[in-house]
Amino acid sequence: MEVTIYSDASHKEGKVGFAFQIHCNQFKLKKAGRSPVRIIDVPGAELLPVLKALKILYNTRTAKIKNIVVVLDSISVISALQEGKRSFKNKQTLEMADECYYTMLDICVKQGYGVRDVYKVFSFNHIKAHTNLKDPISRINEWCDKTAKIHRLGGVKDYYCLENDLSDILF
Image (cartoon, rainbow, N blue to C red; front, side):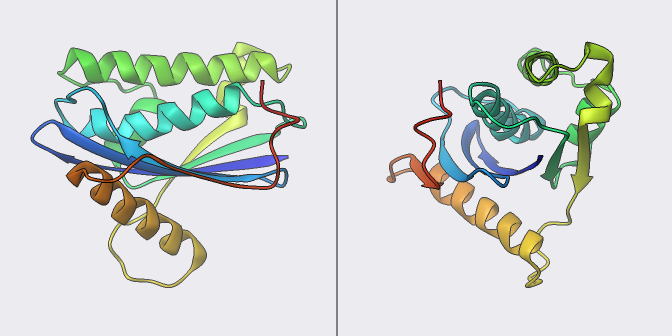
């Protein structure tokens, strides 16, 4: 089974809204919200929805996962997670990048892979933001972007939408 995670965040003055989608043949999940803690920088904000999606994926019983593709519009986050280039100056961001990496390792082990297989299982794709293109990936990125911004501004409750019943696969 292949899993694709799409994510984005909106950051301004430490306030962060996030949105992500997880797509696979078992389910499709959309989630958005506002960070309860102040996040100092944009890379930290961009890591938040990736981490939240990874945690959900880890805690979900799925068929054997062969590949997990993470699609986002932050090259610095892709470099940090794909190549281990964690040159963030902010301790909070470094810790979040490490937590993403350790969760990726946990997913691999849970799926029966070795820790050395993490980059055989995970791949990262950059998508250019704000293109107004109508292809499916651009439309998902636009949804994540707009939804994250709405949640950063506040006044809305966390959003959760699930297609297909997960009651038999969630722990």
